[in-house]
Length: 347
Image (cartoon, rainbow, N blue to C red; front, side, top):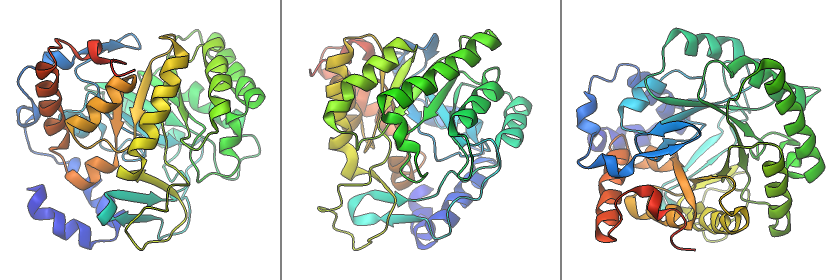
């Protein structure tokens, strides 16, 4: 069905196509069995105190306002992350703000945290009981006077509604956000969030989503702050502002680049973090995943879980099933019985 619809969808403006996809997913008539694979138990993995049916997750940015997460879980994802959610409803940056680079299997976006805001999204999640593992990605409003407080509001609102919360300090499309990668600013933010956790008597896992554009010397300081402030996992990485030189598409737009061009960049960062983390915090790998091979590369580099977005846009709803199928074949060929045995195997 997707192969028939793809030319139609790709003739639409990318944001119109995306909205069409979200609305279509709400009425997904296909049974879950269509997306199941043989021997999927080889992909079961336990992390964050949860049993994931497989390590393939959907990254934040696709279901920004939590409108279709259960339908997405039906497609075979091991988990779904919604958001980024800001305290107040936000339109985001002026359109057009998503650009397809078809020759590069890539996207550029400068959406700017467009979402329905905490109140509507929280009510949506409370109303529609989650049929799988759900995370929410939180961030600050564009015009907020206190970004740290916006993060705290996100945690206070969702700690009882989801399985984990991701602190997004890495979007290139919100002014000043990436400053939280600085050691003292990150320490201050995480201290405030842990104070909220203590006051609310919650042990909800906090995840930290990191930019691919950090300088190498900052890796150790980010790791130290994360370890000392009870971060449960690190997501590597968000979109990049760089790596434009080798693109074959003629689209010259500002924003975060995702998809194939970021694949090697994120894998290399995963390797560097994995070596320094020494197993103290698990990694979720993101960037250019659209096949079992690219998924396996991230896992042997040190990622315990994975997330995709652009690969889903370009390859459609069967991409998760195909990744799982190929990943199981790779594990069998390597004599590996369960995916967790492969984590960091290539380091």
